Image (cartoon, rainbow, N blue to C red; front, side, top):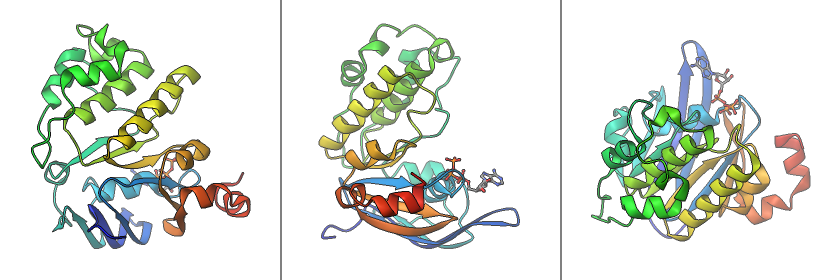
Length: 238
Ligand SMILES: Nc1ncnc2c1ncn2[C@@H]1O[C@H](COP(=O)(O)OP(=O)(O)OP(=O)(O)O)[C@@H](O)[C@H]1O
C-alpha cells in the first residue's frame, strides 16, 4: 500500500461484558480504497465497525484515523476526522423532515471539500427530492436508507462506512443503493462495506476482509476472492 492509510487498526480486541468478541484485528484502509467486510452472521463485523469509530471501547490495541491515534476517543471526535457512518438499521431523525435531516448533517470535509451539497444529494436520490417536507419516520424503509446515506454524504466524508445498507429492502431499492455505492466509489471516497450479498460486495470493492469468530481469516483483492470458490464456501458457507 503506497499512501498512508486513512484508517488503521492494530491488534484490536473488544468485549461485550465478559464476552471476548474481537481477537486482535489489524487492518488498514487507504485513502479512496473500497474495502468489503465479509463473514457469516455474528462473526463480529458490526462490533468491529463500532470499535473502529469508538462506539465500543477497544479493550486492547490501537485505532488510528487520519494519522492520529484515536484509541479510546468518543465517536463524535472520531467521525469528525472524516467518517460518514450509516449504521445497521439506518439512523435518521424520524421527527425531522427530510430536508432538516439532510441540512443538519451538512459540513465541509476535512480538506474543506464541499463536493456533496444538498442539491447533489437530491440529484443522487431523486426520490428524496419528492419528499423534502415529509418526516423521516414517514418514509419507506428504502427511502430512510437513502436518507441515511444522503446524511452521511452531506458530511463530505473521506471514508463512508455502510453496515448492511440493503437489508430488508425490495430488489429495486437494493439495486438503487448499489448504484450509489458504486458512484461514491468512483468519486474517490474510501468505503468500508458490510452486506449479506457478498458477490455485490466483491464486485464493488478493491479489497475484502473476511472475519470469522472475531478474527481476520482472509484478506485479498476482491476480484481474486470472488473467484476463490473454496474460500467463499469455507468462510461464508456458500
Ligand atoms: N450488545 C451486545 N451485547 C452482547 N453481545 C453482543 C452484542 N452485540 C453483538 N453481540 C455478540 O457479538 C458477536 C458479534 O456480533 P456482531 O453483531 O458484531 O456480528 P456481525 O458479524 O455483525 O453479524 P450480523 O450480521 O448478525 O450483525 C455475536 O456473538 C453477538 O451475539
